[in-house]
Length: 227
Image (cartoon, rainbow, N blue to C red; front, side, top):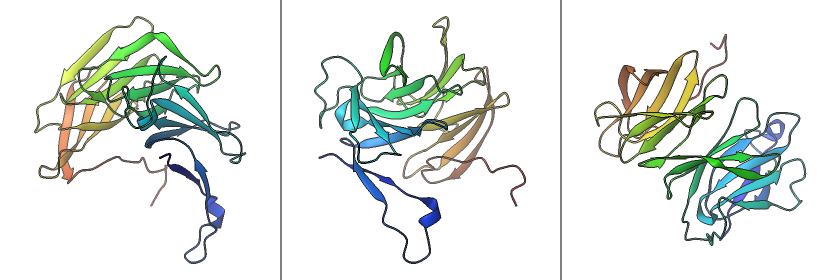
């Protein structure tokens, strides 16, 4: 039942005759993935169907895969009680925000000790999606679905601020990115209503919102000077 992670050498990708990727069996229903900054070589996966964080050393793909339960006593393996869906590194690389869509919470994972900080868990009304950290890693921004909301969670104090969206502005918020005092949020909509791209300030006030087509999933920032 465990799926595979494909490790691809980009220098070996060609129009025809690309090298076969290295496939590593990881866990049940992996979804989000985060790779630690160089010189690290580990990839961390949100193992939705196994209630675990999977850890793969991509420099040694034949080595053992670690699976760290998101909570004590989980059974997982096809019947998730927590359902880790997304993992996002803080800027300093010291913390992973783990979004659990079944238990409606975000947990903080230390990649060095491979443990969760049980004193800092953000509970959400809906299922949390892909988060974003403030520039100083002091605040975590969390989009959540059903109800459609975004949270600003201050880690030092535990204070939480949130905003609920109407369907026209943002239906099914999926991924948020914080950049230079603004939050950029992709909202999926559904298979009938178009998704939207929403810009908010750091106080969670909507600056602008625009439709962007059916079921958008993410976005990427182009490098400076791109033409």
